[in-house]
Image 1 (tube, rainbow, N blue to C red):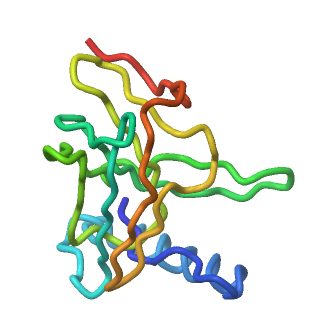
Image 2 (cartoon, helix red, strand yellow):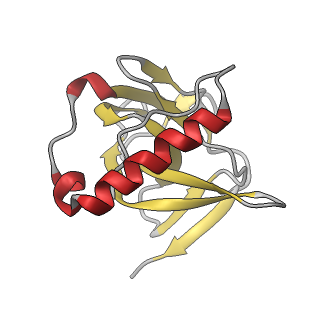
Amino acid sequence: MLLSACSVPAGSDRASFKEEIRREILAELRDPGASERTVDPASTGSVEGRLIFKKKGVPGCRVKLVRMRWFESFSESTPEADPGAEFETRTNDEGCFAWRSIPCGRYRLLWQVPGDNGWIRRAAEKPDAVVESGRNTVLADIDLGFRPIATVGRFP
């Protein structure tokens, strides 16, 4: 299911955002094919960043952007991956990566260095990237010289 709403803008009313999401979910339930339609270019943005080691870019890393949905409960906010809403690319010779025309939302960033088969991510539960309509989100450099933050999984 791909929700077309953007993330909660700073200073906006959280209750109205939740109501907007509820309406979209109900609309998708009434029209199951809605999530398969083409994304409106006006509701997309872009993301770019760089993986570095010892201040130099790391080429050939796989980088994945996974859209997350946050569910509120009485005690906490819990992230869950949005099935089908992930985008993958590789770093160039300077360690840079970029995506264009990404649907608005909150995303988690994962990376995999050449020769490894485990995905690595930051441990924070907050989103790594917030894509807003018509905007380019530039992420801070990710230094691979630090200990791995969290290993997401190993794949054969």
